[in-house]
Image 1: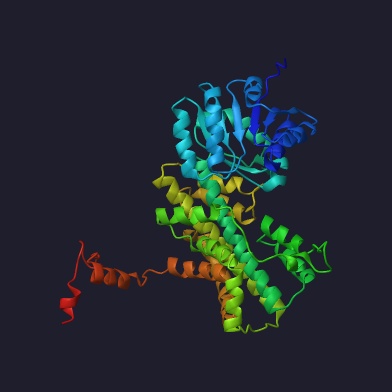
Image 2: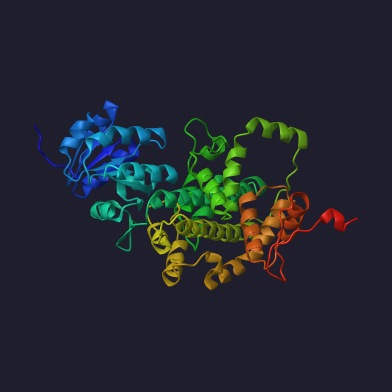
Length: 473
């Protein structure tokens, strides 16, 4: 009977789980993997590592027996009921002090519930967000752990070994109490939705209004990625436009259906932002546009009914310069909204999320990594409690430099019949956030008129109500 003591067990050997185990083994760790699918177990056993060892098992109890104590077990299974099912199966097999980790995209409220359930048996439960996709899992993701800090310290050497590195610094940090790790990952994904939406809007102007071919689009996005907007999403966007279709003579991008699917994390971000009363309208818009993309038949009928006549644009160099600035502007606003949500959530939910650590670990490995995060890291080091990036003079100066070109291209595009909802949402938020006074006083008057909801005044303290009908007789 094998007596080797393995340092971590993985439940779920899909591509992410398998790649993360191989990453750990490459760094000298002895790791186990379990999956109900024997072909996935065999695939892991057929893999090799130069430094540590990796072993697939077909029985959970065998995994428990082979793990060193306190046991460290990570689940990479679909969010929701599968996580609860695996947790319920494991709890009777675990001992006080063992650490159970959910490395999937779970809803943070579910994670908090599981933390409390496991704590009743003195089991540490940690929610850890992992970003970077399949390649990131294999060679270095951004890792977002939250929960019991003592449990994090036990995992820290392992997580730092496999995380992406930026200037030698591992892209992992303890991000706060309770379900903070999955809360941060949720907001990360909301920002991801919004940036992808805005990039797609710039693409649509190039493709539909300027009639540029994918070769030209590759050059534009590749050039943008060499400048201050450098990011993973721009990098892969440029590469997408180089891909020919294997089934036809067309470019692959032109053959892909325009229904954008989603797994729910962007929707969660919008829903939770509303509960926290934090405006994240760029993210909200991105979620709504993914939903709208699914109404293909209705959109086709509407096009036949309204016969949209979009104006073709001609000066591609000027349009490209203005679109660059509009995307840069929108991306900054999008990050600002997401980080403002983390700031509010950290306080309202008592998570104690260090924003400077969040932006530090987002600089490498994750999907939203970008050059902008270096700036944000410096800002949050100087002012860890900054409630919104738009309040920092450096960001204000940058946005004001980008503002003119942003307004120019959005005006031209809207007059031409093109839809740029993400970028327009970013500009609208910017204009509203910097307004000393908004027209919401009329909303309060209306609420008081029809529902006696009362209002506050600008000239004296107290709560007031007016008998509006009487005032107008």
